[in-house]
Image (cartoon, rainbow over all chains, first blue to last red; front, side):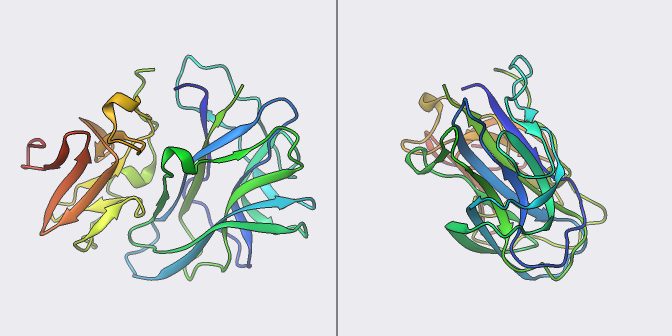
Length: 163
Length: 100
C-alpha cells in the first residue's frame, strides 16, 4: 500500500463547544479518499472520564480549523494532493476546529471511549469510508460534546489517495 | 514501503505513570494499553500486506513504547495481566522479551 497520509493534532487544547471537528479532510476534485483510521487521546491527566466521539461528513458551511498539512507515512511517496487549510474547503485539511460550521453533519459512526485508554477506529477492509472526488462534503472525527479536560488532546485521521 | 511508523506522543509514556490499563481492554477500539511495567502498547501506522494479516482484517506493526516489536497484528489485548496480540497465526503472548 502507498500514498497514505496522516492529518492530526498533537497535544492541543480543544475548544469548549459542541460538535467540533477535531480532524477534518475535504477531498479535492481529482482524487477520492479512503479513510483507514481515526484516533483520539489525551495526556493531560490520569482521571477516568467517558467521552463521546463521532465520525461524520459535513457539507458547507464547513468548520473553522487550524491548518494541518497531511504527513506522509511512506517517505518515498509524493506529497498529498490535499493541502492544509483553515476553512475546510475542498482539497484541504485541518484540525482542532474552533467553530463548528453550520453545514449539515451526517453521522457515520458514533462511539464512546474512556479518555485513559484513548480511541482507535480501524475498519475491516470492507468497512472503510470512501469520500469521492468533488464530494462537496468533508469527513472528520468530531467530539459531539466537549471533553471534561480540554488540554493535551491528540486527534487524527489516516487516509489513502485513490486513483 | 519499509519505513518506520510515524511517532506520536501517545505511543510512549508521558510523564510519571499513574494508570495501568484494565484487563480486557483491546486495541482497537482503545488507542493504547499501558501494562504494569509502564510500557505503552499500540498499533503502528504501517498497514501490512494481506498475507501477513489475519483473514478479513487490517494488520499493523505492534509498537512497544513507540518501538517496533517485529510483530504484525490486528489487535492487542491486556488479559489476566498479560499482553497478547492477534496475528495471522493466532494469539501470541508477551513473555517479557518477545511474543510466543
